[in-house]
Length: 142
Image 1 (cartoon, rainbow, N blue to C red):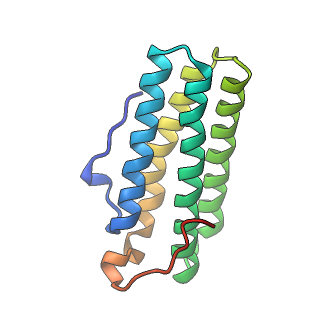
Image 2: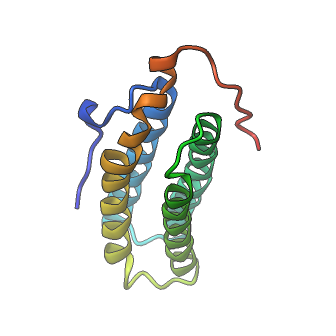
């Protein structure tokens, strides 16, 4: 399943939208590299980048939800945890040289990301910085 960012997916928060675009881009890199190159070290590198970037993004969303008392926060975080678990599984399989399930995992992550941004993150629109103004303090390194 090939997915690309579309402005219809916007959550009306410039920083979150930039993160989402980055996640879509990293996933497209992984998909193109995994389908064309059988280099587990190189593929593992991009998967690790996806892990790091998604964790940074999930922390930002968590801050947004906490700051606004978002009632669906626990369910939302559980979805983040499932994504993190699946990406770690994919990285582990690539690191072990087992690429037999790569398309299945990439498809799962693609579908998950698309659903999560369109459905779950859309619920955060009322809380987006572009709606309420102001700047959230966020340390990208923690």
